[in-house]
Image (cartoon, rainbow, N blue to C red; front, top):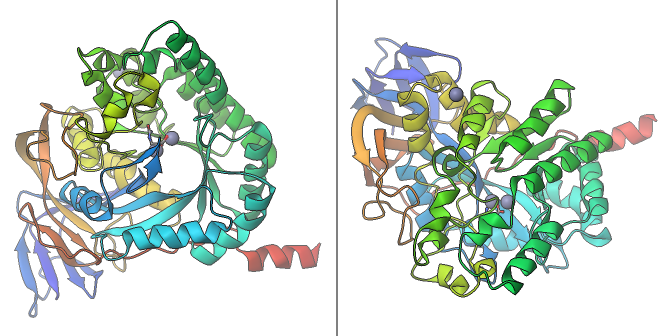
Length: 471
Ligand code: URP
Ligand code: ZN
Ligand code: ZN
Ligand code: ZN
């Protein structure tokens, strides 16, 4: 049904203006004044900000990891995302053990089908990089509409790539145009530090951060940057946490390297002392890279303000505290790594960023939506409010004051890492392709209504073949 959003302030990464928005057939049909409502549902957005839907480029829903599986699936995870103002996610499709990478993608579709309430794409996360999987990559990416690949330099016992395979993955990225996302920590040295700590009898959660020092993030970031540049690939450094890594990214960008960086709300707001909470409570804050010393928060904010980091991912990867987190009760290295952030990514960035005067409204939209759409091949279908774009729209009340709590969140997990945080602003109603998913703070969508987003590689095979024929 047609909808006419009246009286709100439209905010994009470029603009901010009073206008009405007419939505028809899932798209933004007109933006202006005195538009003909002609049978449309009229929505009064006076006093509200009208944002493009958030795009979360980093989620792990229903993913097997650290000997267990994440607690939010595609239904609970995407409903929570929608409540929080996110209308598109790009989730990591994990391939590990499948002989054919394509089988992993089929499996990921089965997880999402019938459950997702918002739109979604996949990054291919190749847990086992070898000759065989590397040779399959270009075709799988093209056939499945996946334009990005993630490689790990951490998790030595699960997914870590050698420098050689990392470099080969970058060559695939350079050849196909796929963006290569890298988790930058030196997993081999971390394993040595972990084994030493355990041998000395240290088992508590705080040893998670003590065995993953920021130098190892800086070192791996530098390595990934140089190897990507040598191969000619576009590098996207996921979940940047510290000065050591930010400095490497800035230096590379100043040299003209093709490097982008993402950070996540917890690194901007919490610090490593959370892992020192008494009892086992620190386990709630165990994810990788770990929370850092507080001074890093200012470094990250400055990098966002100056455009040296471009996106905010949630790194949603939830495990119940009174459940799977307990796998590590006697050994910090067995605590499943990850936290619940999909719901609060957008709201925390508005409150800590815009309401506290650290970033402008336009920078906020760029960071939580537009830049991810541009980087991952979804713009201008997603990531803005413009005639012809998908009508993914968040009506946001900037004046509400509320307190984040597990007792009111929608994620399928028994704690919230931002528990007690007072935030300003709240998504009130959210639509995806012109249909309400959240209306007046209530979920009104349909599991299964979310659509898979096929993305195009910058150098599709047809282009690559033409190049070969011409050379
Ligand atoms: O601890 C984290 N971040 N868990 C999710 C997997 C990853 O490294 O992104
Ligand atoms: Zn990671
Ligand atoms: Zn500052
Ligand atoms: Zn992640």
